[in-house]
Length: 443
Image (cartoon, rainbow, N blue to C red; front, side, top):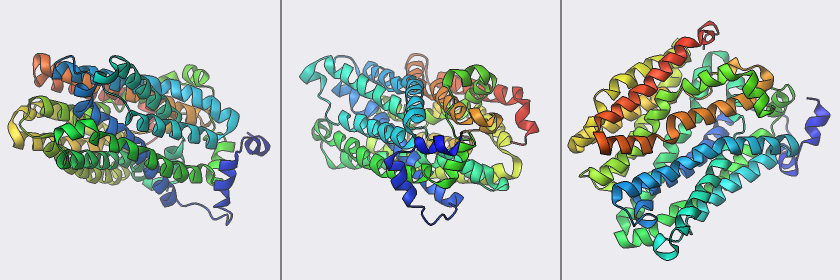
C-alpha cells in the first residue's frame, strides 16, 4: 500500500493521536505493551462483568419462571451468543477499517462495546416486561460480541513484531495479562456490592453499577489504543501490509490450514479458561457451601496466581520455545482434568486447590496461546488471519464451555467436566503435532 493511500485512510482521530508523536521518537515495546494491556483489560472487564452477572443475577432476574439450574443454563446460552457474533463483527469492522481507517473502526467498536455493556445496566426484569427482557439481553449480548470482533486492532502483532527476537515469548504473553486483570476488577466490584447490600438491594440495583463502570473504562482504553495505532511503527507495518486488513474470505480460502491449526492449538487453555472462571462460580452458587462473595475472593486470589504463572510462561517460552510451552501445558491440563473437577464437590479446601492449581495451569498455557501461528501467515494475510484465528479459537474452545460444563456436571457428575477438558487438551496436542512448520520455525 502506498503512503498516499494510507494517508487518505487517515481520520481526524488518528491525526490527533499522531500529534502525540510529533517528536518522531521511536516507540518502545514497553510503551506498546502498556497500551495493549489497557486495551485487553478493558475488553476482559466487560467480558467478566457479564459472565459474573450471568451466574449471580440473570437466572433470577431474567429467568425466574424456571428452577435455578435451568435458569443458569439459559443464561449461559445467551452468554455464548457473543462468541457466535464475533466473526460477524470482524467482517463488518474489517470493511470499516479498509474504507474509513483504523481510528474510526476502533472508535465505533469500543463505543458499541461500552454502550452495549452499559445498556445492560438499564435492563428491566422479566417481572416488569416479560419475555422482552430475554430478547433485549440477547440483543445486547450480540452487540458485545460484534464489538469484540470489531475491536481487533493488531496491537499484539505490533508488540510481537517490535519485540527483541529473544524476547518474543515474553511479549506474546503481555496481551494475555488483560484476562486476569479484568477478572480481578470485575470480581472485586461484584464482591463489594454483594457484601455491602442486602440480597434484595443487590438484585434490584447493586448489580448494575459494574456495567456503568465498563463504559468509562472503555473510553480510557479507546484513547490508549488510538495513540498506538497512530504511531509511525504501526503506519510502517500497515503500509508494508504487515497490519493491513485483507478480504476475510480470501484469507480464509488461502490460509485455511493455518487458520484451522491455529484455532485448535489453544483449545486446552481456552476450555480451561471458563472452567476456572465462570463454571466454578455457577457450580458453587448452585451446589456449594461457600457464599458467592467468598468464592469471588477465591477467584481474585486465583487470578493473582494466574498473573504470576503468565509471567513465568513468558520467561520459559524464551528459553524453550512457545510450542514446547503449549505442548507441556496441554499435557499438564490433561492430567489436571483427571482429578481436579471433583475437588469442587469436596468442600472449601477442595475448591481452593481446584482454583489455585487451575489458574496456575491457565497462566502457563493461556500466556502463550494467543497468536501462536501469526508468524506462519504471509505478511499480506497476517492481520486478518490473526483475527479469524482468535475468533475461531474462542468460539470452539470457550464460547459454549460454561453451558456444556454445567449441563454435563448436573446430569452426569463433575467427572464429566474433566472428560470435556481432556478433549481440549487432546485437540491442542494434535494440532501441535500436525503443524511441523512451527517446529522448523523455532516457535
